[in-house]
Image: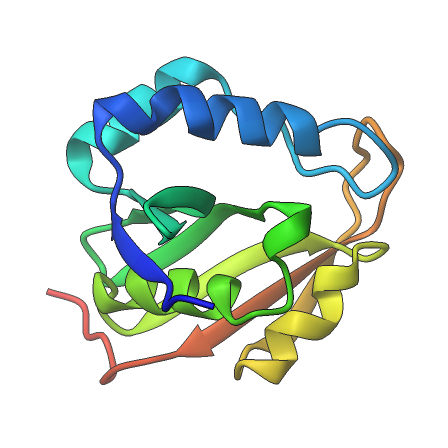
Length: 152
């Protein structure tokens, strides 16, 4: 097996990103749907990284960063045939490199990924019980990765 390469997404990667998220948006373990236009914008600002194995993409992470040093993982998707081989961890590390001091995310309680986040150092901090389309409980996780942020 080759080593996974992580690199920033380019406009050429948009079709792969959109296709993979559409595949994973169906079924009981689905991820949220994000419109093409948001991916397009984030590719231009460097907010999406892809995992590649043998020059073929195997997954992506979409993260946003604010001026206060907080990164929010919006979506992470790894192909089913490429899971459990540290790709998600490598993608999260790429997103964290862009972070200031805190990384946060939300994850539906019924997803297998709920066990992944604490395993890589994230702490469950809250439950978002606002009504949603799938009537799922959504857990909030965060990880402090840098110094303390201080207001201007």
